[in-house]
Image (tube, rainbow over all chains, first blue to last red; front, side, top):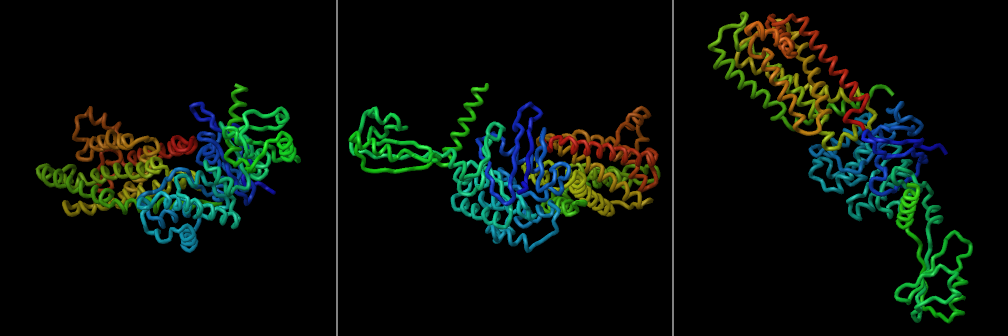
Length: 315
Length: 255
């Protein structure tokens, strides 16, 4: 499948010498929801800003739907909608005027029916004549989305779309993003909320210190890097583990009342049966078992730490 | 894809709507302040002054007063038009839109120049209530009016891009343009100055604008009208070059 966005060797070094992005290669597939994760200052917004034309790359080449973003900027940009992180709005304009302004700016003829449809989808229709300054933060965020969708883009960038948004609106937005994907829009989002990426994304990219650490299918990533843990609740507390249990990656917790067994989800044999047999042989009785899987958040934190440790070693 | 006409129209409409929201500041105040000039200089003081090259003093200052407002309004409208999106962060939308540098400038400068021309015409109409005047060369009068409005709107656009704060936005109109206009023959003919100052005044570019504009009204000029036109076109070309450079390098717009 041809990538709808192709990023080849893109880097950005600012005039002051700060390198925000180091030779990034990335392909975004048509119709997917791609989540770009990374700590503050990792280069997420710089990458998005370069693709959208707000920041010039120092090196590299980007195409959007086959159009070079610099040589063929009109065709490339007309495919892209952007919801920036900051709530930058024209406070004195009405919702209706500002969304129509965006449509015109992107070279589309007026289409009141389409604008009405978007405003209704985003629950903004009854606010269409309100000035933006009179809206709540969540409503302003919806206006930003309406502006980004006003020219019917096939690629939508959402930079921290649910930052500072309440739970209900966040769920609404997730629903809206899924709806957009169904209609064929490719969605690229950056987020601090791992839950958001876990909930919505098809693929995940992790960026740190301007480098794309990895790009992986969400489920594969969780399978590859996710760890499972089995918590064994004991009848009687133990102070030390017998010699025969040292072969297992066991940890004594809860003042000796619990044993935590960590195992790799990819391995064919998890070793649980052997562990339980060994416990039985040692006369260690248990009253409850509970297994849990690493969240994407834990995977992300591990990846970032691993990347930082590698950098320190190289440094 | 051909020219993004909808994009130009969107920016133009947006800027004109801003004028509509601030009618007092955008339109009424320049007209009121011009009335005050007419009352003080044209009627109160001008009544005691004789004619200048066959034109009553009240009528003589009309082109200068229009230029005074035209220059300051063109600069302030265009500079604020591009500065405010930079300040508020909404510039991201223009930068990410499929609009070329020419289209962006056409939208912002076109709207600023339109507002200035409207103000110029309103001042011209207002002047009728205070003094009688004739326009000897109406075509050239409108020609100079539009050319000056476009040129200084473009200059204002450059200031708006350059300015990082509100002080910088005001500094050139207040500290440079207004003094140059006052000293550029808005209220007097430079022939009334001592010979040395007549020569110094010729380094003031506003002299050429006012002189050419006054020639369009009354057929009298401090400098040859061809020179006035050439100087105005030269300044327009300089501004166009600066704007071209801004978009080529991304100066203070696109990092």
